[in-house]
Length: 346
Ligand code: SF4
Image 1 (cartoon, rainbow, N blue to C red):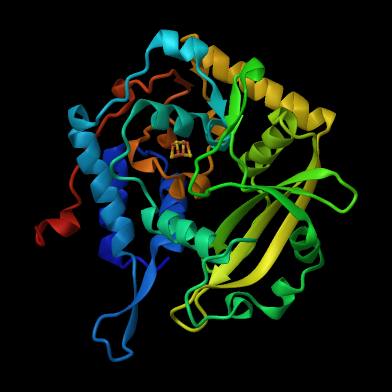
Image 2 (image 1 turned 120 degrees about the vertical axis):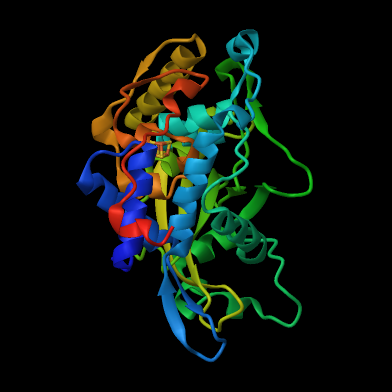
């Protein structure tokens, strides 16, 4: 880890403030914060690059601040009668599969200090610039400058591009496909028709290649894709592609897709049963049930990258249940002794 001795002591102290008790878990979380938010900075602008974890420490300080002012966390109104009748979006399913606590927190609070906002924003811009079709490439830049030769010539990408576009999401009109019977709505990135006349759906994600060099396909992204295949009934969608575009800034300014990873999926009994179970769990939450949170599923890598981690106390592993809305009694600060070694610097 690249935390200095004193930074590490301070970071550990802040994590104990948040409620972490387990040393291994603390180190694991800090290590993943560093991987995600540590960065090289040229403080002098003269090529004098230094690695800094100050953003990681700042995140912990922000979390302590949010929790010390928990009465200021703005709550979203969740009326029980709305919950009974509302539809679940593909994003709801994805959030819940990613982590039920994340889903509950996002439904309960206005998130004014999300983590990783800069990555979300970069991802959104890249979606506009580098997307499969209808790219908004800056003037003077050729499409081939936005991706490597291998990516440009990837067989599946070429096949998708040659297919007939039926629907393109994220356009000026915010169109959602709804399935009232299933209480579902969703907006895929694209729907295409292949040369055999079969409809298929595509969901794409942009991933900064330096943050995680290799990634398995995330279950929540697959759940999102399955849901389009299973529940969109305006088209008979037979299969779908999940595309991970790995980008970097090789020329220091323009983003470029360096590699691509693609997973093809069709509806099958396992994915269908899986989605049915997600719906059952979501509905139980809406009914006000107290759900069990399995602390053994906690994964510090996931928690470090979680957009609502500053609002969550479940990552400490102390709580094993949850409800909707997220109970603010979970949001507690603790009072460990301030480290002697840091006292003289106060
Ligand atoms: S920080 Fe971890 S436990 Fe908390 S919501 Fe995020 S992923 Fe879930």
